[in-house]
Length: 547
Figure 1 (tube, one colour):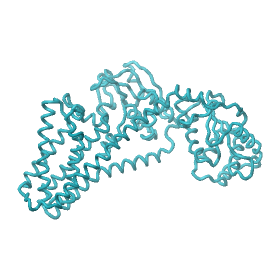
Figure 2 (spheres, helix red, strand yellow):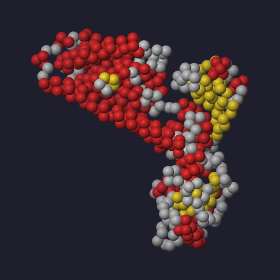
Figure 3 (cartoon, helix red, strand yellow):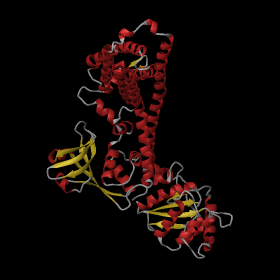
Figure 4 (spheres, helix red, strand yellow):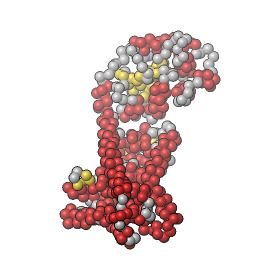
């Protein structure tokens, strides 16, 4: 069930799905949340380059190549291959798990499952473009365990939320069987049908929110004459401006509330539900006729609703519920209870559905905005208008990375600055995965005794005098990564004899530079002599700095 929920509420784009599958086969610890965000916000999404760049960012060694079909057997698995679609004309990215003399095991994106195919048939679909990938010594994501914990909590919350109504229905049925025995059979069956109706009508509502969802598309386009869109977007899909999907959900959810609060074995409840179900069954004729004779297309979800309505009618007849109705039993209290049940479901869905649509659209627009933001030409245009460093930084602070790098990143920071600490691991990742970046750290501190930040700054500068880059980076990690800064522990781990006090002149030189450059806050970043634009963060730099 959780797999279905993932496909429904967290649909995977083809490049993201291929990247996630191969990263799991390579045993690289990178979360689905991060992989999805990075790939889908890449300016070249959905190309193979978007996957390649993200893999490079997270230390997965990769190379895209064009290869002759007769050489595929020589490629080490796993790898990503571009395949021609069978159902669609578009090409897809697939992950090849194994390739031997006779057959190939690969993930078919159109079926969303692993398949085994004859080698010849597989090669007929191959375009000849592959992405080779291999886990490197630094492959993976910082904070992977914490992100996976958040993902699991989110999935558990979704599962519990969507399991609430079915669990409540089963519990109600168990209690009914305990009190009424076999007499609870038809009421329980009717309740299960109501829950099934809620589930299917929820899928119809979700189609309104996300009609391009791969899971829904797989259901709605499973045959030549199966086309949910043709029905759900037709003129007959609304009545008085309200979609049949909304009315269907309101009907089933309202009936569930009526059954729950009225009691599923209560004769009045059964009678009221039976007559409401009888009136609703008229819709079966209308819907089937419209799909059959007018649209000449079938909507599987709509047909499922008709089947549930028909089974409800049969259950009510078999249970003899229509014969239970007596006008004397239908009090004003029951009329109000029924009206309130259906009104609650109707107004609730009409409140949340527009919000869901807006949230989905906002997410789509944000992703497109991020792709535009990560376009190198736009970044360079904005960067060229930023403040240029006219005061030299030669000899200031701590410098690590490739001394001959084409790109220089200057970080102006303070030892106790929270945002500076958050930026530190991002910069470390940039240095680890990019050999053409040099980092210069300048501390915005005072040499006076009352500036507590000057003490760890001087200590870090003293460590940097050793010239041992590995030790310098470890020291920076030990200072910036912990949530709570403890200078005493840090000083014990990195003992220095008198070297700390010799750094006062360096602190003063950096302070003078900050004053001349008009540094007003930390962290402040400069890229190749120009200040990083406000709309960008250090996390965005991986899209622009050459590798």
